[in-house]
Length: 257
Picture 1 (spheres, rainbow, N blue to C red):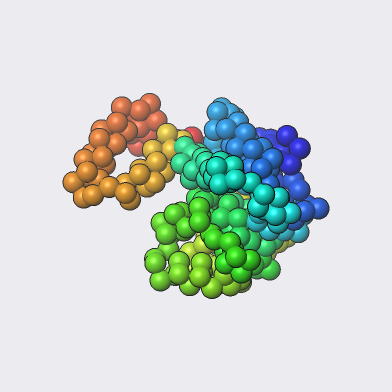
Picture 2 (picture 1 turned 90 degrees about the vertical axis):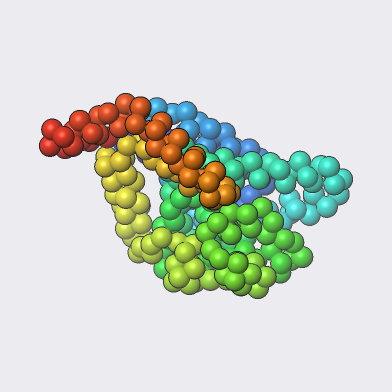
């Protein structure tokens, strides 16, 4: 991989956007490498939580405009295939069995904001700007729309997607796009601390099952959703993590996951 790096440390898998000279703009190769890195992290026994971060001053400026210009020569089928390529990356992150934390050290714009949106937690610095700016260049924030509408209400989505305006970190926090704002000098340390709390205090099996349920249950009707919840409850009772956790609780023992 040339545009993405991946390594693990203390059960955290770090996926890093590494195209700082292009403001970590997304093109087909970068999307391919991101998918490969997330697949690697998903199957890595030394990785329990994933942190998505970036090198350089910008988290990601979104789609590489030179690349988009090239795509204008493509047929509909070719463009649909390219669009589906990005869609599958967003699906992969959102439905990952591992918690994904976005560490946003700089601006996250358009597709870059989309990348952050599909993560489970987002930590950012006060200076970062966020925005779905596609309408300002005659494009549409199509794929991220599905995921954004699971995070905010329709009124907020229209405000963000139709205006294409940039948000400050504080505004992103108010719109639930960000979980916490952290000073740049301690962002690494803060994200690592948060990840380690998840790793040591929560069962990996429980995190994966809970995340999958949150993703799936929203598209179900009441009776179907409740039956799915009951089945998931029953399945969870059979896991080794559940047996360990209950035994530790009954024996008044502290469990380190």
